[in-house]
Length: 196
Image (cartoon, rainbow, N blue to C red; front, side, top):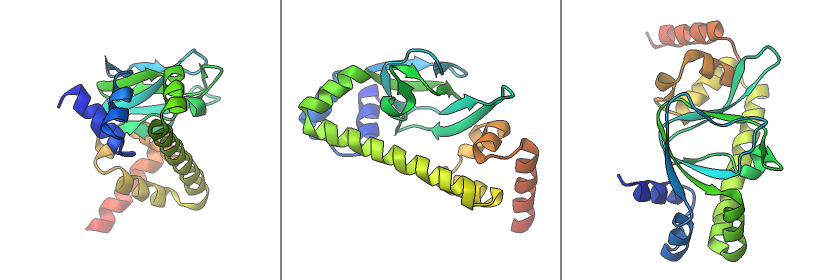
């Protein structure tokens, strides 16, 4: 599939744009291949882009007080990274994003995207939907961390992200679920025994 088709599919996964608005946005997007293991957004550093994840897997993360990486969210093909406004302050990133596979991204300067939003109502509505989706995702995650058991969180992750568990490391998944790798191994064993 061409990069243009991937961009089109990623945008349409959120909202349908007219051909004119879609082309206006696509004309501003630069496509970039990023190697596995690359932190292309780094906490405390300048980052001025919005990102469309066209192909591959990445995660946003923060480093805790004992220098351990804690996964905050996973992004796969046809997804959009948290909006620039939610992951930065004065263009300084408050989280990091690392590729967990080779990734193809579409990126556009946040300032350019803002201009498009001001002048094109369809693009503004698209951006607002991306922001709403991110707010819902973060709120659901916060509630889940408080109200669901570790086993329930794992089962929900599997339902929301089929096959992703097999493509990411156990420590990354465990950190996302708020448990240790040992606890994750025990939960997997428990689920395996339940299936028998």
